[in-house]
Image (cartoon, rainbow, N blue to C red; front, side, top):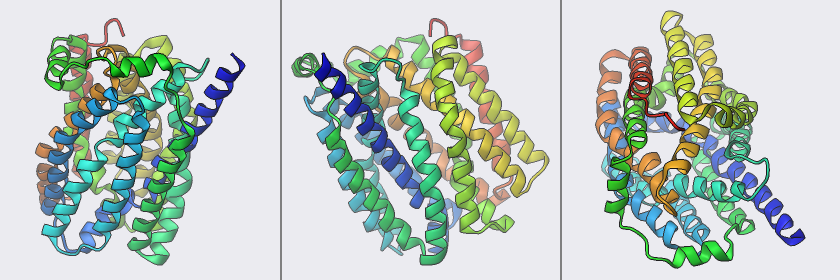
Length: 394
């Protein structure tokens, strides 16, 4: 018993450190990728096409990664391979200046990177399931802490050393993240036996999800939100740049949301137990609607910073609620595959449609009106959850 308690504590410490480095490391590059593409001479439409190509690759790869993980006795090994492969593609992208070559590298990156989010969240759920008083939010907040700290370093580094330093730093953190996973081993003998049992096909899992009204309602709501907000997430850094914010200030804007997420994630853990994930998702969408309306009414850097702060709460609600929702409703022993369907396949399916459309909207109307489009998506998502009653029993 004592040995088990020590193992649980070690796994908790390891997965928290992993989330700190894996999510936090993205702060060295991800907020500035739009600037990188723009400075290579790409138009909004071309940036959207890159996202579409990556989305197609991720859409195809995610269920395969998820099923492979669900069938493996040691799924963390698969995650480690995906992290190391992603690091290689990040460095490959840093040297590209031609659109066609960028498209090839982005597609490969999406193929190997499609595994990281669903497999990481499944691993975190597995670790917290054996730890008393520890919810998914208590792990995910360490990712927010890592982002809050490292994105500030990223803004400072990129402003002084250029975007290439951001690529190098991000690739390094992915390698470190893969090494940290060696500290996490939550699989029990029972889970290893279960992993050896025959698994349903991807098609049968998808069919069972389509027969679950709650899962269908969640999918439709997420599609509304993601389709409308894709352009805002993609071009907000450019909007801040147009308003006169430098790379350091853009880094501060991204760090602000992550700082708010630290207490918000723990709050979300308590609220999801009291009200359920459906209620939390609706509250996240209410907050997003209000803050996007605020930016539309009073455009400027202070308004965007207000939105970024509020998004720390809404994102915490959303991320905890979605993982808990799927953890409750996923077919037995198929959490990774189901998370891959929703977190990667469904989102990438939306990006295939939304990325070029939002790129065109950016080229035609500018970044300001992307806030109005994102607001409409939040409203439609809220209405879908409310009218479908898809959160009943959750």
